[in-house]
Length: 239
Image (cartoon, rainbow, N blue to C red; front, side, top):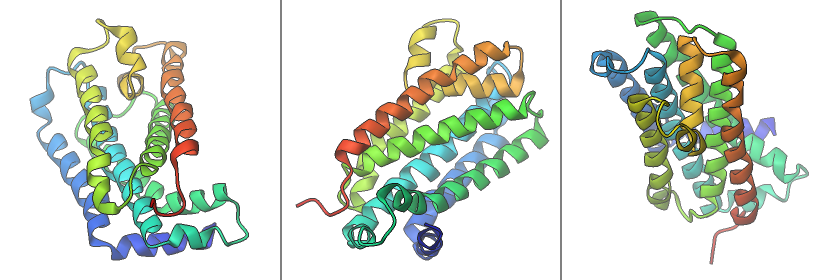
């Protein structure tokens, strides 16, 4: 597993297209949001902008990058060759997604560190880390499911678009309108409860039990996505 992760990290570093997708775009977008944070002064606290930053990294770096990587490895038959190794499928997949997951985690720590330095620090760091972990788990699971429908890295630009735009749109929707209206709907759609949880962790003010309940919809989407991935994911190119 560790050998696969090291090899995958070298592949990412050498691939300019993946580097642009996983590093330049999310960091540039995050920098824009942070330096133009006055545009979002109508948000109820800094937590909602923090949630948008988390989703920017989670969508453009982790989700889209993962789909592109898995599609490329399938196309060049690397996935097929991996299955001849002694490791089982779960270990192989963990090795493949570990580098992009660590890169995304480092990015979100850097971006939120800068954001905290220029605004306010989060009220509950532990709850924030839990919220980021759940959000990233959802992005990974959705990426695995989407990769099953993606035949090539070029096609990944199309197949990832609906979920990418959908997750960002939900985060922005909840950030702008809050959760006083259409509360149940906003918490059930992918990304809605995670956005609220990140905002609660950053700004405080909500009881811990009420915040922890917000993990349930996000983790439910993780389970649904894993079930879809188990049916759709392919180790060999589609014919």
